[in-house]
Image (cartoon, rainbow, N blue to C red; front, side, top):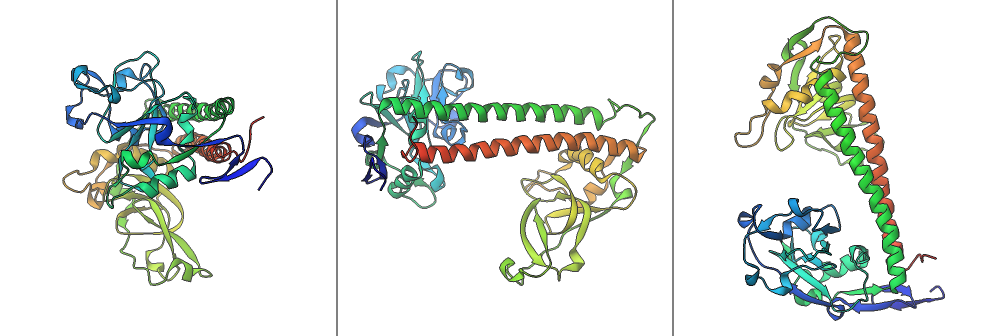
Length: 407
């Protein structure tokens, strides 16, 4: 053990940190139950546990987000003061369909004391003391040790839940307040960077969507190109087929050392298979998902690949730009999906789709290049955001356990 550290029930922490049970420093209570159907745009702000599960943030600012928060039309006289959320309150969910969601929570920012009702399947933690900084609360329940404690106390099979009694037993390390504020400040800076990247990615996606609407319809032409576009039937220029039901006769591990290609099912790479499925091997084709929630998603596959029976395939050597056709099809394909029962986009429907496309391969290629550059920029930004998120997770684990101390 390093000098200046001590062993505790939550692991090794700095000697000047304390250990607190949630029940010792927070008053724990439940919310006011109301169904999603009872919520509207009228009444007082209401926090449904489903909104905590869906949130990508660790706090909610009632003043800033007031218009977006669901409302419950109920007199405040019917609401317990324990269910009214104040600035700095922590709200946990008491039910989740998976273990990961068991410890899901948000911290309330409500300096203006706007009536905000904690609702169905929520547990409200109100500070008894000022020993925890409000911004620090956004992060301190997110360490792996804290999540393990929540998993330990959770009960249930299909739905995992934690009770108010058990949540009080969860113990948490508490640094001195100045260190809490320093840790929260650093992690907030990283959150701000992630938020800025999210907004930039959203802006770039909107720009790409606008460019597609202009370039793929011919409303805007790239410099140097003119002339009419043609309307073609997909089945007239592509051989329309689909993948096969592929049974694994060997595991991926057993296939190591043999020639392996990726297998796509519903546009997701699933596993590798040995090269003895040569009859089903494709290369440089356009694929689309035929069944399920992703029906109509279109992708270009330039490598050699296999695909299952929920993956349609367009094969062609006709001089058209597959990348341009992929972009055009992706912009219209969802309109042709049948939503009677399980969503479907079958081969005969795709074959009969008519698309408008430039007559000359040079213009098709130029359009595809513009869209590819935009895709590459988006991919790079998303990779940077994901790397920053991973960095934040590592920082939290080190800072919130005291493994790394801020000067």
